[in-house]
Amino acid sequence: MIIVNQLRRLVAQPSVARPQRYRPGAIVRFIAVILCGLVVVSCASVPAETPYNLGVAAYKKRNYSAAAAQWTKSVASGNTEAMNNLGYLLYNGYGVDKDIDRAIKLWRVASEAGQSESQWHLGRAYETGTGVERSLSKAYAWYLCAIQSASINSTAANKDHKTEAAILKDAEDSFDKMKDGLSAAEVEMGRNLAAEYIARYGKASP
Figure: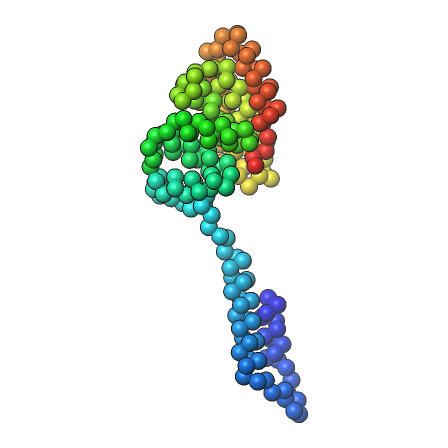
């Protein structure tokens, strides 16, 4: 807007008895400065594509191998959402060779950083005993931890609150379906673990 106003002032300058003469080189430099300014403003309005976002775009097109490649790059920079998503592809063998052990490791790192969906995935893994030793108490605890984290992140102030609200519902549904099948001892152990997990990992997403 500043550049446009400068141009308007130049155009609207009143004539004088002896108009200022601009050398050709000065005019070229002036135009170059204006063009550079316009380019900077244009670039600032277009968000840079990140490996994570490119992975999301590829996933939406069901190009799972491309999504995995992009999320692998994003994982290297510590992106916990990429860890969660790449873990999902590895756990199910979508676009990549199935590697459940690696998926669990990614979910565990993301879960300990407060990533709610990874916490829910860990709960599911412990409930089914896929990739880990089956433990309904740990499943109970991770579900409650996911519920806590997603509850924090599902407020309207969070840009991803709709996604977090969906995770919250999934975690609550999983917990409700499983809890009645636990023994009294499993519930007690689950509650103790849940208190520990929530204190350490039940927090706003990184």
